Length: 249
Image (cartoon, rainbow, N blue to C red; front, side, top):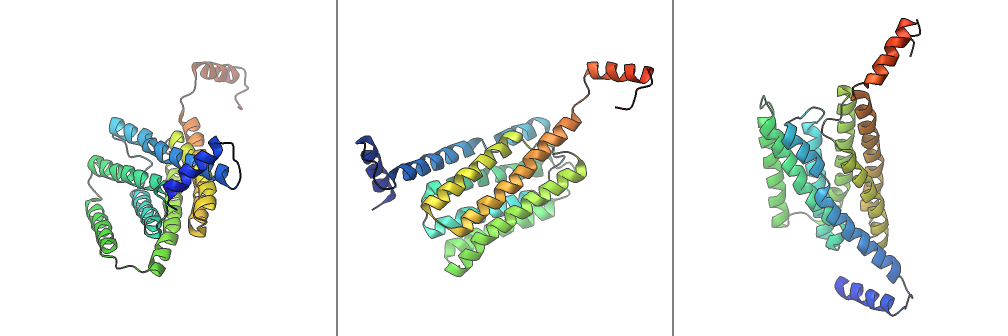
């Protein structure tokens, strides 16, 4: 039975008030997967629009971008090779394309063009990997390594970004909306993977990704609050405290 036949069969059962089996949880999983894929179209949109508007790269790490693209490529190619339904990983492909666009924006607005050689080398490596995939030169054991590497690279990307933001005391164009959606998507993906693929490699990746996305989300909130200019009322109050000898706040 194909995925489509199973999906339509479950809908017919639910519409006829036949709630036997696992149709309810299956339909919930499919709806969540569809929602994640559709929402992923706007995942990086706030960051992309901000970068196009301000041409600002402060707080961003080229290494983090390289790792994002590589982990996204591995994350997409692994379930595709395993034959999992597209809805269980479709957002990975969409976000991968958005990360590639961010990569080219950074390359374009890099004032000193200091990373030209690294960017060219990275692009060549990605094209070479896709060529090897196209030729079918990887066996199942290699694909399991690729699936696991996706989680490791994603960790490297997030940890690199966390360290970069900590050092610069800024998260630059990173968006709370983007990472908020990322966390919700991670939670939903843990459920859908348990339901549809039961692939421990994918499930572990989503758990780790949630923890790291949460860390960056909290960094964005913290550094944005610290970078806000003081309100006029606060300045007046501080001056009053200083005048009366109470400037200890």
